[in-house]
Length: 188
Figure 1: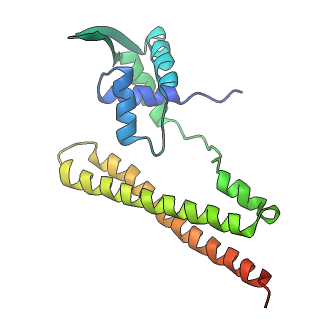
Figure 2 (figure 1 turned 60 degrees about the vertical axis):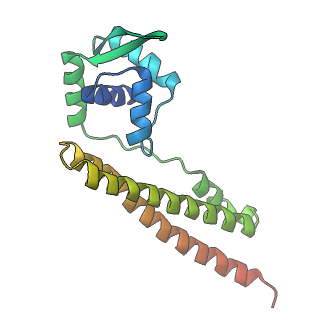
Figure 3 (figure 1 turned 90 degrees about the vertical axis):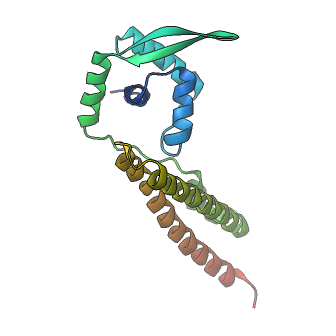
């Protein structure tokens, strides 16, 4: 059985919050879901057309002064029902694709210095992501206290924080293990 395209549910979910254009959806994703779910314009626009064709959304044009017309999409009642049904379904497990782990699995065939550098860079990336997530958390706690969705936004950003903290622990452990290998290989 082919794997179901979950992009449709990302679009339905965003449209359930607010009608918008393909540009609005991309902007929403960049500001909220891009750390765990992202779509390109090449995925967004065909999916919006498909949602309209399936009766899950409707579109209308909006005139803009000095710019081309803008297509706005709105969720239909049927689209809301499909989103609600999907939200109740159990999640499907998906395997993470992680190039670093793939390289480390075959790390004995690489230079130890390269393996160390890969992990150092990955660690730095997670330091930067952790700072970003903590900034988002701070913003949500300070500016979004009256928003009914705040708790759900905090849940997702806290996942990012916990994941980064765990990955930083793993990076430190891995760097220690690789450094121990380097120490063993070093001539006395």
